[in-house]
Structures are given as C-alpha cells and as structure tokens.
Length: 267
Image (tube, rainbow, N blue to C red):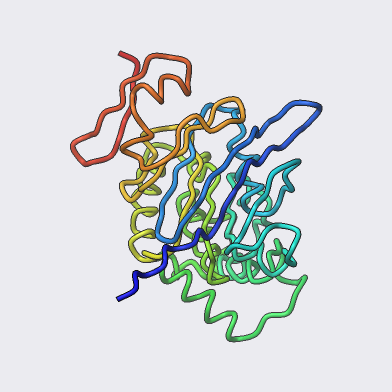
C-alpha cells in the first residue's frame, strides 16, 4: 500500500528578515509550524520575538524572505480573509479594545479582525458562535459584562475565546502573561494546556521570555537572540542548559519540576 504523504506546514517562514533603520531586528529566520505542534519562542527582551510573530500573523511584511500559509506564499493571495484566521493575540490587545465592550462583543469582533462591533454587521449565528467560544473557555457567565470589569485572568479567557471565533488555522500568542501576577500566570499556563487539549489539531505558537511559563503541552521550542534563531526543534532537543545559556548570555540550568514543567536558574 502507498505511504501516506507527509503533512504540510500550516505556516512557514523561509529566511525572513525585518530591517529597521538599517538594522536586522529579525535576521534570516526560518521556521515551519505543522498541525498539532505547540511552539514556544523564547528569548530576551528586544531579541525580535514580537516582530517575528507579527510577520507570521501577516501584520508585518518581511523586508526579505517569504511567509507561506497552507503552502501559498505571501503576495500570491489576498491576506484579508486569511489574517483573521491566524489568531494573533498580543499582550497589548486587551488595552486596545474599548473597556465598555462586553465579552461577547469582544469575541464577535474577531470575525472581521476588528476592534469594534459597530464597524461591521453581525447576526444571531455570529452571537451563538461567540457564545460557544466563551463556553469553551469557561467564561460564558461573563458574556454580557464589560471587558474593563473583568480581571486580567478573565480577560485572557475572553481573548482566547476570541481566537477561536474564525475557525483558526493557528493561534499566535505574544507574551500572554505580560499583565498577570503569579496566580494569574499559573492559571494561564493551565488554561493554555486545556486549550491545547481541547483543540488537538490546532497549532499554537507562544512567545515568552520565562521558562517557567512554558505549558506542559508544548512540543517545540525556538530560541531567539539578536534577531536570529539559534536553536529550534523539539523542546527536549532545543531547550537545554547550554542553548539557554547561549541565548541569555549567562550560565543557566534547565530542570524539570515535579509537575513536569520546566524551570531555569543561574547556578
């Protein structure tokens, strides 16, 4: 019998660079994201993680190199219907949304990649789908509450629900724990694991600079330093004491905690 064909990547960056003021803030980065993979992109502040994520999400055009979605290269397709399906959730998204919007409106607005619902028309089908997304994130009881009245943790649940609104091809989370305290961070890590388990085929990419924030469900890791990827692959192969020390320019030890999650510290 013929062998099944190898899966194709959902997202692929090929030798991507982003140049600003003559400096490469992203430098010759290549990465393939396949179905069911859960990537973490790890690196120090200013290493180019967010700029690279913005190119993957089609919000930032690379200065050179190519971005492909489902095998189609950027520039050969209309990005307008595709970009909302690359569910990009940045650390600043909650602050960009009007606090008076209800949780349900926040989720619905994702249908058109908008920050307001009055910019577009929605129907009862959209409302029901948005409610289903909130239910999956276990925050449906807050559907009619203003976003500004929710805790940071509740807002993250709403934003993850928003990411599901467009039947996403991939979910791209840029420092999702940036505004959270220790309790909120731990709850978020648990939530991301639940999210991954409830959406087993959906690829997820998370940007962070804290090893302690890596969910158990993570399968792959890319370490970035000064705009370049210095290590990428399965998390067991790519995230080692040696590679992390190189990434942050300090001697670090990577260890597994009793609960299976990773931690790092200077010896």
